[in-house]
Image 1 (cartoon, rainbow, N blue to C red):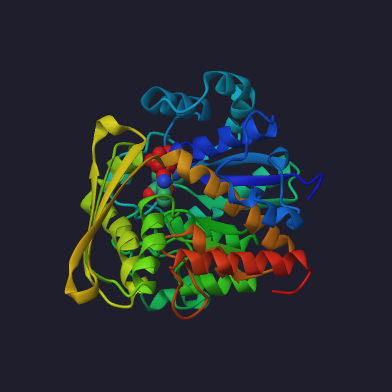
Image 2 (image 1 turned 90 degrees about the horizontal axis):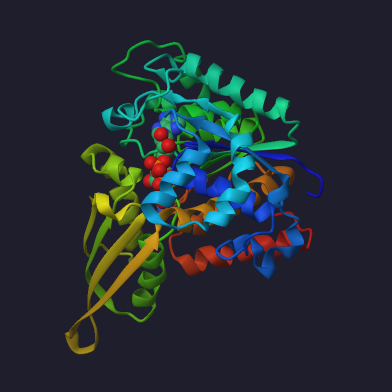
Length: 410
Ligand SMILES: NC(=O)c1ccc[n+]([C@@H]2O[C@H](COP(=O)([O-])OP(=O)(O)OC[C@H]3O[C@@H](n4cnc5c(N)ncnc54)[C@H](O)[C@@H]3O)[C@@H](O)[C@H]2O)c1
């Protein structure tokens, strides 16, 4: 909305995506870059009055003692992706936003993420209650000091290992009763979910761009509806999985039988370093692997590998080998190689999500935003099965946008 001041609070603000989103917003606000890569700048979205880059103030949590400017410089040094003139022009905004970055929470994130902690103010191994209070106080300070009309929380922190849900996560009452539990071997929730809980309890929307548990907990679904706020996730669909959900419908619609689908991924950034831990990797592999069966309706043999190759920095290569059977039983092969820069692929999608979630919040929507499925590898749903076919997902988003543009209730 024109004249609005909105806050973007990123969990993992100093990471590759966090710093690229910040630089991107600062550059867009100065009209220094085109909006290429941003879905929400397509003509379809013109009727929605989405926030412009100039409206945003950035803040966030991180666990490392670093700066936004330093994070941008590191990406530049390793991956050579930013125009130095653009970085120089945006430095003052990055340093202004740096004042809004606070030490975060590391509870049940696994030892690899714990090793990243370098800020002395980070809350480690404490009760859920203490973590929630600190996160909420940081969010409220950010909103009040900056006179923000709205704040949206975006999780772009390192991927946590999978977290098994229990009976206590089924309802808000059951979960709230354990807020002060001190059993360090059985923490109530991992950090990604504590951030989601804290945000949504304040009525702020939460987006999970990672495969971590985040808000995909029954009790947190209940909270979102109760507090009339929204959430969306999980795991941004930026590269290889995007290709899978574009190509698998083709095989299905041409009645070609996929026999096996092998995807090898190599990349070298900090995300890759964290995913090199087999426990953290499990969350990502699960997210990347489930789409094929969901689209085809049967399970061909699949293999997803993710390997950390340090020298590649933020540049990722995925090589996929699809073995399929056609007419008269003849076996054939399709292969593709995807080479992209992780942060450059992810940052515009994160911004699209932020703009659409802020819009939905203004419309008074509540609960999971299912129309955003095309942005995620593992889309959350209110009930039933998630749609993975990229074309159907895009059609659902288009339908939502058209109905909103015509002022219809959706
Ligand atoms: N194309 C993509 O890059 C892409 C696509 C989909 C999903 N993701 C996911 O997005 C996330 C971010 O990716 P990235 O490349 O920016 O990673 P990154 O390692 O560069 O950044 C992650 C940041 O999170 C911080 N962090 C870790 N645990 C935290 C916690 N508990 N609280 C606050 N901060 C914490 C780290 O210090 C780091 O600065 C990862 O989970 C990744 O799997 C990335």
